[in-house]
Image (cartoon, rainbow, N blue to C red; front, side, top):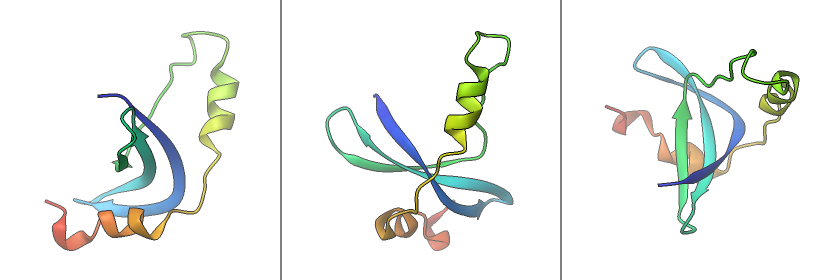
Length: 76
């Protein structure tokens, strides 16, 4: 499965860990959501580390659907 994700400003706690909600869509056009605690790019991999850091700082307000997708009552 391939998914394109966009970072949001919403941070929630899942099992004691703070995670950021990301919104996305699968390659087949299905909306989806992810709760990501860590994302990395090794600074020695190539010359684009500064670009990665800059892009990572871009965030949008989450949709209501994204927030509802991670209702704490349903997180295991």
